[in-house]
Length: 260
Image (cartoon, rainbow, N blue to C red; front, side, top):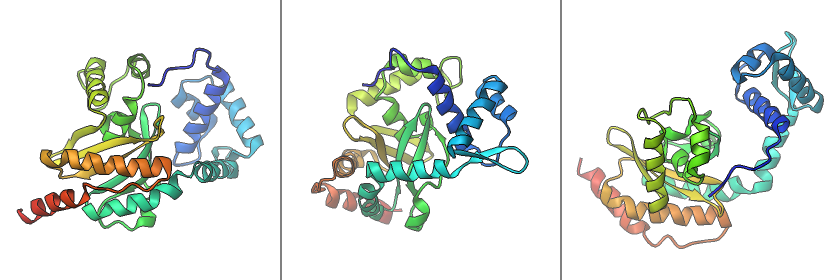
């Protein structure tokens, strides 16, 4: 379980927060507006933006606003290439699409999930990559699976004095859910009427999570967890694992689909 560093570098934290806010802005943004979103002093944000522009990670537009620069795209591409996660994950994720459910792979950034891959049934594979922006971690199975890897103190600080999506009763309700996830080593939640998500973490220590979402009856949960764990091991360790429970799961899901 991850713990917060005892000596965080605040300047680095502020710089990365500025970088993230810039990366997630759908349009060029001015320094004052970015400072307002972050709760920082405008002069500090302007210095950070100028530094990022100097490095080529940000760039300034003709109207003096800021947007992602070529360096940001290079960093994104290099990190995905160096980690190997997309290269390993794509064949595995594509193989899971035969279940005719949503298949997703995501990573956690503070209280949000970024989906590296999110494919509803029928969506062309090329459109499944990076198609969704940041998504509240507590709204989905992938986010909850990754939040459960952090200790209660970290999670409590993360959501201090803020509303928690899907947990209107507050932090105690969320912590109870995370405790259950740690006990069972997987997530199963209802995301909407007759639609469920089952998710497990990927890697040791976990760096991402994989999930399947759709109409998943309770009796199929164990088998689907086994399939997702097999997939997670293949993604996390680049090894081939025989998915022994797949025939039974396919039979279960096909039986359910043909009965409606």
